Image 1 (tube, rainbow, N blue to C red):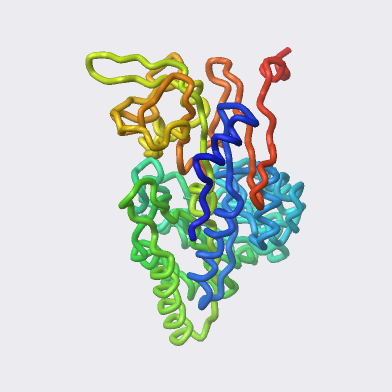
Image 2 (tube, rainbow, N blue to C red):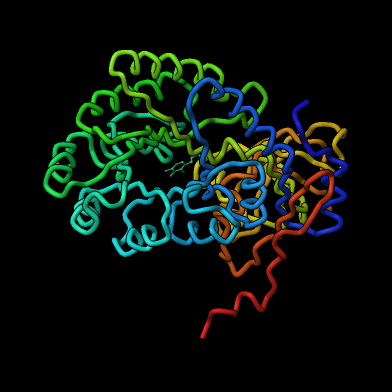
Length: 401
Ligand SMILES: *Cc1c(COP(=O)(O)O)cnc(C)c1O
């Protein structure tokens, strides 16, 4: 059975901790991880949790307890990972556009590093020569991902070293004895088709003869989850099989065995998360019936930022008659979570749960309109535990002088 929290459990948790509230179901995280492990059991793979999707320290500790490694997008995430107990060699730092000093810091901490610009790669080569292996992020000029905002491998993307500049990388290897042990691509988020990953791999396979010291290929994350009934998700079993075939064939031809690294974020935590808020106001208008909640895009940005879909459930009246509502936030800007959505009949004071809120939910929250950030709760073995307290008015003033 797919682990999920019942409407009753969610109501109880919301009553205990108040709203707006993020709730994460640890069992579901473990379930998603197991699905990936099964799918990749026949390939020599390693999974790094892309923690930018959800960095609460208790979630990181839970990930570690499952045996997952961790992928970080900033030096602070690297420090959080260390704080959560990850060992240096379980940590990967895949940055973009950062100052070289952060790369020095990451090197001194002893973590794996992917470098994504010629500029930083040259500095690294000059300073460290062969002494410290690094990966490079390659921009393969492939269009992938759910939409342009979350697409990162195409020929106008800021990410990675463009494939047409690889000769310069080769120059650093010969000029400075640079030690490159990994080729990385992350072409986008919400990639459904295994074929896109295979296309990326073929690009890397072509480069490999120039990279004698590469021991692993990093395929990034970007596995899609289902947001609503009937939605496609990445078929990870099919992907695992296709990767096995591609890497076996490569090994036969070249005699080189390569490990495969992955960096899933959304796939591990998206559907483990619920965002619960309360309906403050019902406002019938000629065009639509608005349900105004005690939250806004300051707490869950994805609908306004990416046009993302989150199923909305009235957990106070789950069996009520379906009616059409536009669920809107309380921010002084257009702030719509869902347009003309069929939801079980809502009364003021009812609790609504947004599904798939685990990834890029709390992480993208802000204090816009001087609203307070929500609390977070982690449910492990049926027990709900507060893992971040709700902000208070004093928190708004804390850093102001
Ligand atoms: C964001 C990101 C990921 C995770 O992407 P998901 O779509 O959440 O799986 C993995 N790797 C890198 C380098 C990223 O920037």
